[in-house]
Image 1 (cartoon, one colour):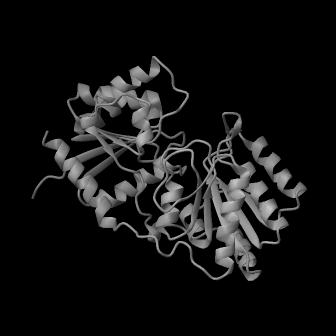
Image 2 (cartoon, one colour):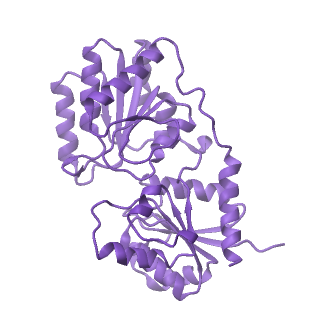
Image 3 (spheres, helix red, strand yellow):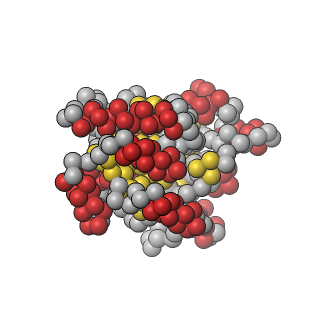
Length: 353
């Protein structure tokens, strides 16, 4: 029997559930019958049975790298990514790295340093074309591939009862359900990065026009942002939107929320390759996103931070649904096997070089 290749995946492992950690979780599920998958967790929450990089146990770390055939790096932490790239080369391992995003504020000489480190990888997966415009990379080793992997619905927990009840109550009133999410509440360029402010305002505007809508906005973590979260809760109450705008921060499956919604929006002012958008499109939901980066085919774009344009695009979709249309029904889905084949061919191919 042929020995399975051992793939060591590095990056944040869910929970908490951010885009990269969800990608790693689904990647493991997709490939664990084909490869021997091991994990190095980089998140702040340590889990039993999974080695965490933050323990600084270098002997366990080196042992894991030494045992692997391929080091597959998903690290968002710049220091961890560099450590993995160097260690992988020192141990003569094949290295594949996915660059999930690259900040606009990164300046020289740091871009040049990053470029040198990234070039240590044998294959570099870019989730969008804009990354290659920010760092100098060996193009013959680069692959353009979004990070989306299909959700495993049987593994997704049901929505918490209070949220399901709130949505059902809105449904009874024939309201269109809209949802959005944020991994955290923070600023970028002195603006609300994930567009919670725009979500609240566009809800106020559409309700003022007499459109029946309800909005669920979920924040994965309020660590270091409890004051911002509470301030927005107060704003929702001050605007008397509490019956139509649910702002929550509790553990839930955002895929299940998408499944129970009619429209998904992504009003960010910076982004990588947003998992939210691809999940929504995969589940056949009309998806409205800022044009801050290149977006997937079938996205409905609005001008970044332009509340009037967001209102226009959202109103159009709400009215279509109220008239009985299903705007997302014609979206062509990519078969799950295509995602699986991509990674199998990638790993088998890199070991031959």
